[in-house]
Length: 396
Image 1 (tube, helix red, strand yellow):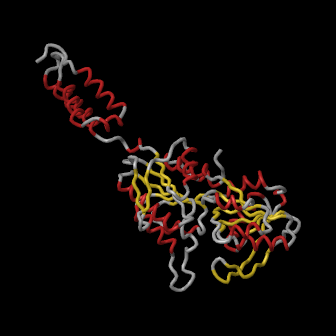
Image 2: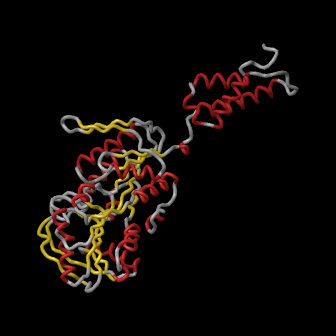
Image 3: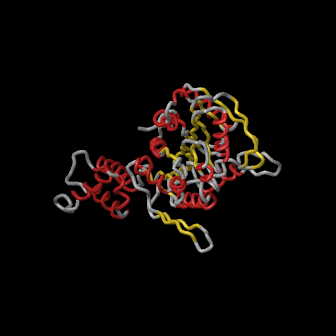
């Protein structure tokens, strides 16, 4: 027995206090060292106590249980951090979201083998963390979807606490129902794939059909571009207060009436008949646009045949000018040629899809940045806050 305190006692006291105040420090300290510090602290007695041995033994056992359990267990899950990953499909949007949150994208390597298989390697630790993966359902849709699935699965197997797939444009969203005999419901298949890959939560924007949310057995947050569109109309479209909001098809009537009600404007509807997918046969305008600015609202601009024909119809009906505002700008096939030769004043899309090349080729294309909405949705999801605020407001 030493006459005085053990020379290492002060160090052990400091170590145990650090373990208690800073739980993450335990991750970087070897377990045997933690245990020895606690044992040395609790087994040492600086001198005789009047209360006797039984009391000292009980007191030491209590301290031993407190310090040892505190120093040996992993950090509480409430201390997890946000980890944001971005795929190759829409890297710019992912970087904008990360900057908005004051963060950087986590490092991961995405390569293609010679046979075009996708290889993903997560280079940042995600154990016990809250992971958000920003993917994209446009461009090379199949490759981008597979990349997202593999990235989700990689984070799940790396022991992430929760994996949220942020998919601004949902892939295969237009195949949401069995509209022909022997036709697949591909949107449901994608939902199954995301679930099996390990996604715990989905954040998307302006689903082509809201019922797609019901294809999942996990939480799905469908954000709306509507607040950002309203802000753009008020700030950038001349004479908007006397404009008419127009839906290019019957399926968008609910979207258009909601927007018109909030802006206190009239609305009109165009009924279209298709020969086949991406090819419109005829259009009939229901409503009056004579002498007014017409604002076409839709969710997807793919080959742009619909909005170009709709603009022509509106001009024939007497509209003074025609603008088109769409959430997802795919601009496939001959879309740019059609837009350049159209009667549209401007085609406004959000940056849910990368469209720099299309914008360079067509001066009519304008962009609404929706990264603040996605960033705020991520922040609120991580903190357990409601995101319903984003249904009617644009983050400042």
